[in-house]
Amino acid sequence: MVSMTIDGVKIQAREGATILETAREHHIDIPTLCYLKEINEIGACRVCLVEVEGIDHLVAACNNQVAEGMVVNTDTPRVRRARISNLQLILSRHDRRCPTCFRNGTCQLQALTDRLCVHEIPYENKLSGDAVDGRFPLVREPDKCISCLRCVSTCQKVQGLGVWDLVDSGSRAHVDGAAELDCTYCGQCITHCPTGALHERDDTQKVFDAIYDPEKIVIAQVAPAVRTSWAEGLDLKGTTPSVGRMVAAIRRLGFDYVFDTDFAADVTIMEEGSELLHRLAKGEQGPMFTSCCPGWVRFIKERHPNLLGHVSSTKSPQQIFGALAKTYYAQLLDVDPARIFVVSYMPCVAKKMEAAYPDMHSTEAGPDVDAVLTVRELSRQLRSRFVNVDLLDEEEFDRPLGVATGAGHIFGVTGGVMEAALRSAYYLTTGENPDVDAFREVRHEGPDRLWREKTFDLAGHTLRIAVTSGLKNADALCRAIERGEVDYDFVEVMACPGGCVGGGGQPIHEGEERAAGRGGTLRAIDRASQLRFSHENPAVQECYKTYLGEPLSERAERLLHSDHTA
Ligand code: HC1
Ligand code: SF4
Image 1 (tube, rainbow, N blue to C red):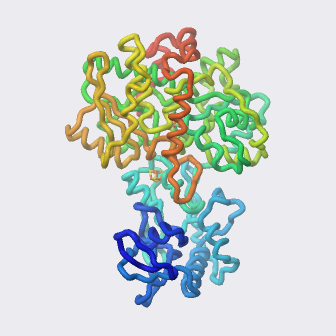
Image 2 (image 1 turned 90 degrees about the vertical axis):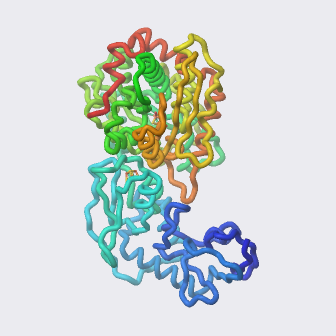
Image 3 (image 1 turned 120 degrees about the horizontal axis):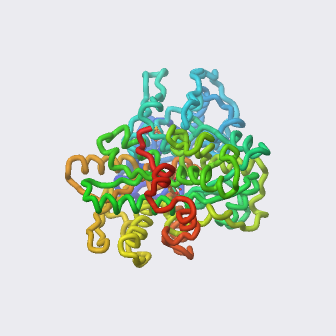
């Protein structure tokens, strides 16, 4: 510990801590725009400047460490003038169109401008005029970028990619990238951007148009992790943001049916579990990777194409749902699939890309999933339709595609797909259910490991599994597999840290990582579920009995599988 003084108060600070960390630990707030703990500690924005006695110039609090006897002042006229001046310079290169910005209300630049009482900008507004590139699911607005480099660092340090970079120098320096080449559309750079410079393509109006079209039968599917976060962007007055209230709220948007992606997750388990057992029976070498995360599938295609053949051919639950909605459910309704419009609510940006792949069409009626909206877009839709969630009673998902088990629910948290698959693989092998918590060890991270590995006994067969999330970790795991250092039978990878609960389409909370808490919610929903094994889902059983036949049947292969090369 070191003894020091901040704002006249003598404190004991952790050795090696920065001035910013120390101040915050002692409830003294210092503003930041570029700072991201352990990811981006570069002092670029210069709004965290403080005075340190004995040093002539102001110092950035985020990347200077405390020292014995240090005397820091965080709120002096000189500090305030410098922070305001630096903020005004940033604003002079910013488009300042807050009312129409996607981050209106959650933008850190907007919030700090308000907090520092900045109402005038004495500098000329110099914009680059660079066009907004809206061709991809991920959109960048150059004139909203404040060059904080959070996107650069997040993509490099969390995802191990280098899509964004600082180009040019001096006053011409700006962030740029090649989204169409290397980007997995995981969206982590969006959730770590302090402004509206990065956001997903907005598809809300496309969905409203379908809802208002009397010819369309508009169906919503809701991903596992959405139920943990759907109300975070709403201003609920003490109302519990339960799953039932989420269903009611989405129904108020005008959907004809509100179904559950988790139903399709249970189908995924039937297909993927059967695929795993076939591979094991055939003695195929090397692991089978999960395939439900499109960011991960795009990553392996681009970075480790030699391993692509190891990715499970089972489509993701989103796409399995879409395929069954346009075939099985169209048949149940006895309608032309062209009339059905499927909308996915996902905690994910890459799902927009996945739905657009050319092999994700099961009928002549176009894509199986017509529109994919993030949780942030769901929030905007609910606010824009003035849905008063506080007044809603709980409602149930529609049937049959709204029936799901606990195994389907945990898909949204790292380790969940693996655990759900093992629960059913055990049954498919032995004809008996295992203890529902028999595979709980896949949930727990080991210390300092980039991935976790476990070995389970599956009716006499030793099954070696690995689980990881975050693409930097996934890259390390792929390399270890390629070098022959490790050998697994089944590997789960999710692109976003923590799994979909930490997805790039989730609500943004500055400085807070909510993935663990949301994951806990999904685990609790699993524990409270009456059915916890995918193979016991009665709606899934009925779908196989009356339509698909067996897992991996000819029809199942045609509708529910892909070689991921499209
Ligand atoms: Fe996911 Fe999945 S869990 S990929 O994170 O397998 O997005 O939630 O919907 O498809 O079920 C996302 C979540 C989601 C799929 C499922
Ligand atoms: Fe990198 Fe993901 Fe952002 Fe693409 S979406 S630039 S992969 S962080």
